[in-house]
Image 1 (tube, rainbow, N blue to C red):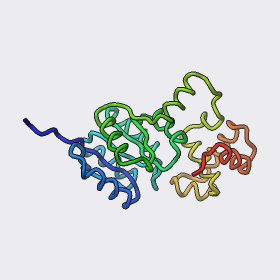
Image 2: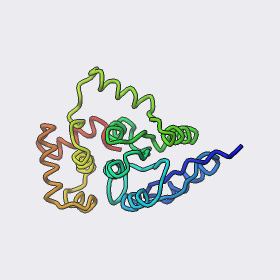
Image 3: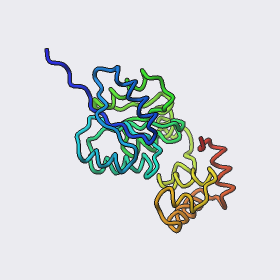
Image 4: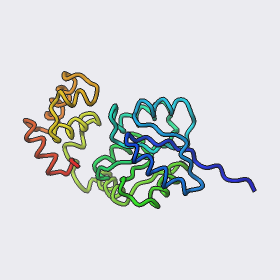
Length: 215
């Protein structure tokens, strides 16, 4: 009987220690092969174009481009590619955004190794993976059990700008970090303040802390 071909996965994370840890966990699993790794968005996109993957395991925070933005670009070029997002952020903070942007699943980095393996198997086989907490959040939104919060109506870039401002970063530093102009970041700031009916950075920061949007 022929051996089952393992799932080929690409790990995308800017921390070498995290990548090594993931590889050590998955080295013990016969049906999963870490066939490549990337430390930034640009490298990940290049590798997705160059080779065929069963799944991409991608961090949501990277130095050159956010994981969600990378996800959107990757799915646009490769609609059938399965992507499992991995993050230190609370699941309900980014999970719904990731799923709406095309992710097949979202997993917190603090999850147990067995949960990681199960999630990878599900996503690589074409299924969706969500935790009970995320499932409840999605159900609440769909059923209208609760009113949507102001930040949920922001675009992914506006939401990213909100979190960075609330973390104390000035507009110039955000522009450098996202490789965008100060004018563009200022535009995002003005737009999100208007959408959320907030007046300034102090109100924005208070809102972010109150709603648990910061790490």
